[in-house]
Image 1: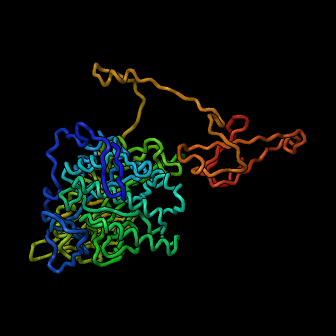
Image 2: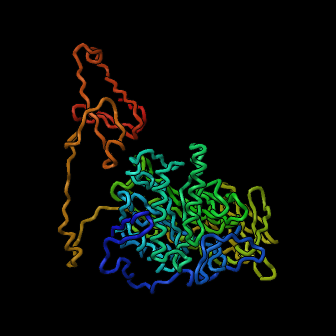
Image 3: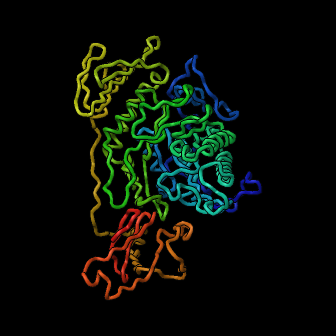
Length: 570
């Protein structure tokens, strides 16, 4: 599907329509329903709560507000577990299964970025087909009766090519990315408005009965704002206010934004966010990125984060007053084509996530976290409607108790932050064994239902092994038999008709317009017989000063060396 903007960038004109309905029907799924209508649990906001209302007037009493303790959805406090799944990093046929597996793992919400350069491939012309069918993805989440967190950005980083910004914007005169630059702000606002209007048109915000409960503008800009000086401060303020002016009826978030205005929730991205505190006492504690693994890079070993440590970080976050937690990633998927950002990011974006690149549950990680989510949800009301009382149980051991005697609520977290030594602690006249670097969860302040260091989930190891294909009589297998490998041998040096002559090196992006990852530079050197290296038999040294990520050197079309540093020498 291609969409285009009308004059003024305020209208939506559909150029082509899917004759069979682009949203389709999920086999075996229940009719589309709003998670707002299906959700229960949680609890009512306290009478003394200071609630900040976000967005414009809502309809049918469907609303998302917040105060210092939690999001309040349709008048009820909600403790939320969210799972990142990026729609372009998986094929659409996988989306229903991925969403369902996340839900079975205990997730209440799905989180995704919006990929600007995948949608606006040239100014004003939009693409929403195939893996970029954002509306279809949102509606699959809605059909699963789950919430959605939409991180529009539109700069997203995400180990994605150019951070999600279209390369054509690089060539708009006087454009400077992510600062108080009028051309950049114009195109950023145009894209943001287009996406918001598309979501409104499809009634996808919770204020309209849809699944979207939060939207994000920008991405981790707080880390870079100071480098832009006053222009950075003006841009951050402009971005927040521009987002608020969209009037979506749901709150806006800005991750790692240390000067977010009162109406925008600043959030945490890290391996651990239990010590994070929002910049305003009227904002809830939200963790937008908990990294259960890491992305892979060519030449390096695969990163690994044990499920015990992930569970510890999540339990500590809720122990210390957290209310919304998101795994980045819950399913990483694949960087198709040339979409991987860099340098050296692999095609696989598996991320060692709870759901692997192929859509399979990764054990014991998926199972261990599922049990954690079940344990925390046992006392959601107690967590969100009571102030914690912290008790020291030792040098690195503590308890946080959420109790209301009049309502018969009492829940506790017992934690041991010593990463080497198991401890025995006494809590309310009872002894508890706390393994090193672990949290025990007591939904009734007495009985331990879960400890983060004790993995009881099934364990399995996936190994790729060569195998002969055995075909059945099915049509799919018949098509497989017709597949043939094709090999294209690339020759060293320039080939084709895109060559030109220039003195010195040239900038990669400006030269290739991001149409290729490779740029050949050739030169001729003649070595006379009286050269010192020829006479003495010593090695010839080639020194190249470059800010390129990697250089390969060929002499007479034979590879002589390669390196990944800015000063190349061979």
